[in-house]
Image (cartoon, rainbow, N blue to C red; front, side):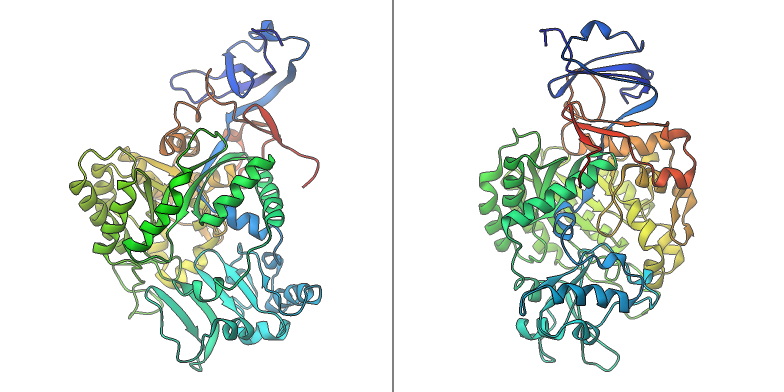
Length: 539
């Protein structure tokens, strides 16, 4: 390559740079890992072509920036890449048979784990399996069935190993489930998860690195170039670093180190001590964004202002006492890190904004974007206005609503479910809002999220159509706004000279793709740092 040549040249029907007010371009040139030029003339960059330039002449194609998934769980996806694939089951007998098959090939006494991206209402029985049913699949192995990040079901062998009995006290912010007969049913929720999960040996390093290779390729194949992983334990981060050193990451990773399960500032201080060695942000592929807290539960335990539709004596749970959370958040910001806090129900949103307001009052001059609200599921007009006034960014996850609407209606009723993730309300207030999937609760995918935000379609029909946004608005939530959230607008989000060459190529313009087809639309190519990541010939 000459000093003025390009390594890669794309000629396309339209290159949408998302650099307002720039009109669509027709050519894009890359040198190294950066965009070096764009042109409105498809042949306007041909002077950069040398004998070493790779040229893609795609007159019918549309080029977009690679997408961010601003709230996902890559670590879960990587772990699940080699776990029992119970998300394929449609009945509890099928579910149990998959576990039984794995047990037959697993040495007695070794743990068996399942994938996490399934919903019980997708099973014919419309419920979770019980410990007793898991025992029929195997009573010679401890079994950990995970569903999302807030729920486990384990068999009797696992309960026994954990020392959980009828007399075990309920942990603060957690639930040990019981059946209608009052006996343990194997269900564990939120702060009860660690009672069993602490006993599960981590997969060896080689298995985990292979899981990350598979999972990051899967994200990239849907058009995602950067993930913000919102629950990375210290050991998970060490594995991510090893995967990075091995060269197997296909997407950029911005990690939130997990304080989930913690309830005191002292515990958080110990976590922060561990994080000191991870301050370097010079690696474009892997960096630590900050710390993740959880204020309330998920689908079954989000903290609401009004009681649940299914139980008028229950309105979810707050995992932190507000005073303790203020102290913990301040411990993080004193060390110069950012904070993302899970707040799903409307009571949790209000409480979190109270906490953040106190932190901001007590710490004047805090850099913008230091305190982020993750989800803001039931944020109503008053709390949305408060968040904007306080300068609090929010991440929303339409795929979560798409996949779980029926589950959530059982807990909250249809009116509240229709109000979840009010993208239109956030955008109309000029809020700092960006979008993701919350995999494994929602399915990841660039256009799957855009489809959901533009249609408000769910597995049980359209919910809250007044909260729909336009295609162009949805694009920005995964590109320019997402890069702003991570503090990387100077590096990513638009296809302009000097920025990283992270882009996707589509064989049709997604803007004109009909609804259901848009949901499942994947790019023909995903480039990250000027390197073709997807498609790939092998999984």
